[in-house]
Image: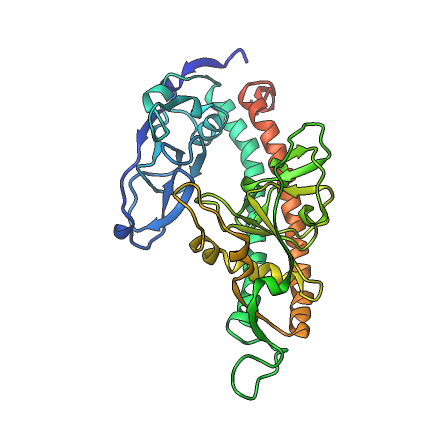
Length: 381
């Protein structure tokens, strides 16, 4: 690390507040609109040239986003206006390992103070080492992006089959009814009639030595379950509150996360959820694949039916159970399951590999950015 220098962040880069762009003025285009949580839309005009690095000023604090193309950073963000000769992708990784949230300004609404951020001390290597570090980590990110694209394609494929069969009414195994209504053997019913369990989770006794993994709302995002951020707990758990294959987990409290769903499509042992999450389990005569897509299709309904004041909203068990749904005949559900199961298994395998890649990258990240792993010798002279 002899060539590394300790500098104030303001001597490495200049942060600037983003630009306002009300939703009614956003025009469809190819320019990414970057908020504190990442790309949230597209516009036909850019404000800054890529590559860019953006972090949340309000909202999602401390998350850092790299943008390859020209972009529009929103006013809830801070973006790097001047890299001061440093390598942009290295700066992205540098900010990811920097404790940005410590510069949270006082006030009713948490936010990052740009001037305070500029005083943070960071270690910065020469430009060739910056490039090498960014290249090493970038290879992991490229693999992660590739896996994410594969997963998205498979998810879209499965979703399209579900919509074709059960939303547009073109299920090839359905028998048309004589009265022109639902196919023979199909019925309008409530989700509770397709479910053996609709049950909130436990109030966990968190314990690092506990043998049971407890998932919370943060673990459920984008239709997927991140088991790596669950916490160990030691309380005994009943059968109905023990997560098993085919269960759908539903975030059931608070704004922003309420209504999110994700299906358990892998064999799990000793896993439960906390009291902010609902377990929905299909009856034995209901295809778990159909059940998973059915419950996911109700996300907007769940969000709209939440009760309570701002910040304290709840999704009641009765609301979930009473959701109006269509129950196809068993043969159609089984045929759907035969087609979808291999797709979901492949998605689950890719997600496991994706988690392993992220863990490896995240373990390397602080060691590379602190100089613990020496890359100088790896640079071609």
